[in-house]
Image 1 (cartoon, rainbow, N blue to C red):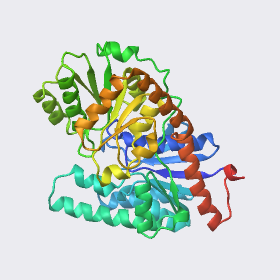
Image 2 (cartoon, helix red, strand yellow):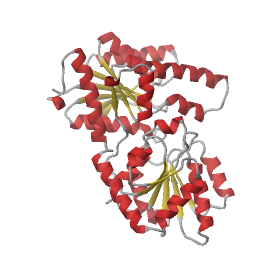
Image 3 (tube, rainbow, N blue to C red):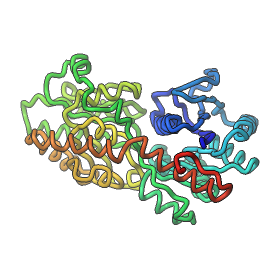
Image 4 (cartoon, helix red, strand yellow):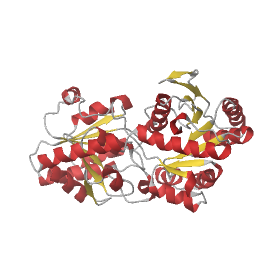
Length: 402
């Protein structure tokens, strides 16, 4: 039998400023393919914009207000509760109160099975992305309270990394209720056949291109990439290597100043924000793709989307060896010491000096995306979580388990 699944995400599925919403959208699309019914609640970033309930990607999407205040929260709880009566499963992502509280309250009121999709340690990200002070301490305390208690309140939890699984176990969640659900790639849209010509022509690139994809804020490590670019050009004077940074964020101005100070203006391209639909074209233009990280609690908890999309495009990858990255890229990339731009530059140089290795690693990366790191497989793991909960409480099992 098919399931009615109410999905709730605290951010804006339409905004390029919140690209992490692609996770819940892709999972929703995969659930539709498997014959289930999905309604997705989201919270628009532009508080003044009025969006209507509408069809999106084969399922129904419902916008709710993100404004702060008890009246708004009560209204959202009422709306989610009305939707919950239709559902078999309530699935919410992230621990932010404006989505998590309506989901949990609705599940309690109607005895619905609630699934928590934990993809990042939000408290740690908040701490590295904000300035110290009383307000940060107060918000951090509230966020910590939610993130420490929500896994215990959910019937099942999917985690994006082994580190989050360990965190779940430390909070008292039974291992049988925890399911691995790393990030995946759309292996049809992201594939090695995407043409590089349009983007190379647009940016007048006729040489080797090294690319970094990611948001330019405190939880990202693009400065390592910029320093590695400087080191690489220092070691290869007169070379025509170009570097591209795809993404935007509040640190962009500071990073552009850093680039200017290092004398890299002619070598580094900042593209700014792009739609997720355009990402394959940008990746296609690159010869080498980079995922640079430091070794900290934020990076240890991630399964980075950029890596699986690099993999699906069949790209040679240089990445920092931290957290899930080693497991994801197993023998299909150059892995280097995290937080070390010298080692990052050396890893890139290894590929530049060895084109056959570059091709070999690209092929292996694509194979891992096809076999392991794709949204269909991630969604199957989440369906297994749903079915565990349903079997325990009602004996209902979805048609995928029959």
